Image (tube, rainbow, N blue to C red; front, side, top):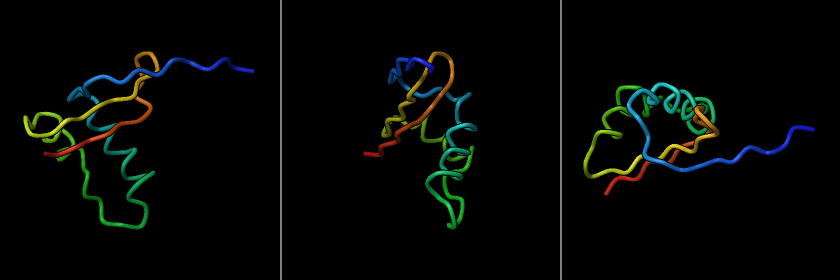
Length: 69
């Protein structure tokens, strides 16, 4: 049995936009138009009026949250 790994939340990084967009496409936007593309994720990560968090297991992103204000 594999022991659980600690997951930490931290600000998302621009280089993670592709992985975040792919997760959105495969896990959230199934059957819908792809709105959260890599370009849009990068823009949100860099937007001062948005918060993008990455849930990381070591050096791998396992999940994310994006909030716009």
